Image (tube, rainbow, N blue to C red; front, side, top):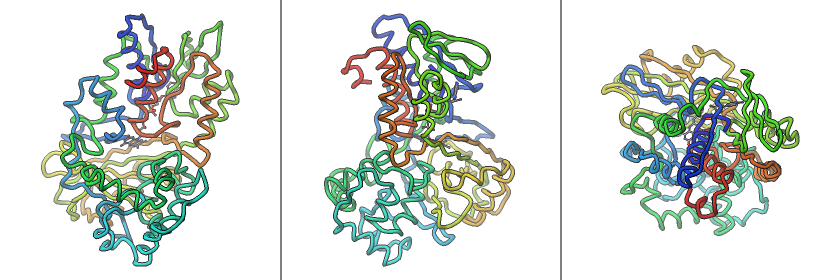
Length: 470
Ligand SMILES: Cc1cc2nc3c(=O)[nH]c(=O)nc-3n(C[C@H](O)[C@H](O)[C@H](O)COP(=O)(O)OP(=O)(O)OC[C@H]3O[C@@H](n4cnc5c(N)ncnc54)[C@H](O)[C@@H]3O)c2cc1C
């Protein structure tokens, strides 16, 4: 196993579970380049605040992470978002405007809040309504930008779809493959022609879910009382003692006598019957370059965007804005230096002591990567200046924390699905090899858990039934 992020840990844990269920011996080694497990998941405590450097939650709609939490006995540790403030703002001409209630990423589902929203011009609203009449498109792998422009118009793209998608994928919408990243919208158009009609119908069928799952056991996003690292910490404790080896950067893998031989930068060599590679795709490419240069080339072709989070702690009364939402996103057309901000202490309980607020600014991404060349102090100064201008923050932060994620976010460009198919065909030619991680079939934590578990199940020869249950 290579890579100690959530994908590698989920893979290792599933392998342990399966070996135990079948009473079969398992010798497992997890090699991690860094000095800690968890990868991009990193939670820190400071002066009574809880800082999420990387992911702050996972999607409960996709079942795999939630199912894993149940098996780990972690369900009681999960917490919901504070739904009293469940709304997102969008920066428009320098001010924060609430996203109209019921707006589903690309299109509105609630007429009244959409019509009365100050976020769109009348022209823009009429153009969005054209979606009700427009015919289906014909491009099977269209960019998100082209799709939204064609169906809903430029304003829908520039003011909402682009910034919301940047907040999730840190992507350029004109590069992002809709089919790979959000296939449900492709399916909506195929089935119902109009995206707005399809969303309305879905909202009528599942009103609680669309309205924020009030009454449902879980909110759309969930996290742990002690932060996201609870998941990776507990996963690590379930591995056999000594299985995880830190500071072991894998430099290459070869096939020797029917086995995998893995070499690390420290000079160590490990032999194994089966190998799961769960680092970033470009790292997997490097590791496999001698075994299969063609496969390495395909893997290298998955671009990875860089980003950074800047967390800033303030006294609540130092911020003029009521912070009555989960945060805001910033459209590229606003030409600002940040792409989003989460009001962390509003979104989840227990993130700041009483009387304080914790804000987390998101910077970089495919459209703004050059900003990350600045040093940490400059990033803090930039984030602080933006918060001053957008939220009326009138003080120096109590503390700040900058976390950088170079080449950590895979970009699903147009052609991604065909590339992944080719990668999987190539991987299948190598016995005992599997890839896991967010670069292939979904970038979120739930997808990563699924990919890791699936890799372990396939390599341990699990039956279809076990795979379905995994
Ligand atoms: C800033 C940020 C915020 C995010 N927010 C969310 C969110 O709120 N919700 C959500 O669902 N997802 C979020 N994501 C995405 C989520 O973090 C990832 O999907 C997930 O954590 C990736 O896990 P992973 O194990 O595949 O990769 P990683 O976490 O990147 O782990 C890969 C590991 O492999 C190791 N490694 C690399 N090369 C080698 C090598 N050669 N040898 C040995 N080890 C190696 C690395 O050191 C690392 O520990 C966010 C991502 C970022 C960057």
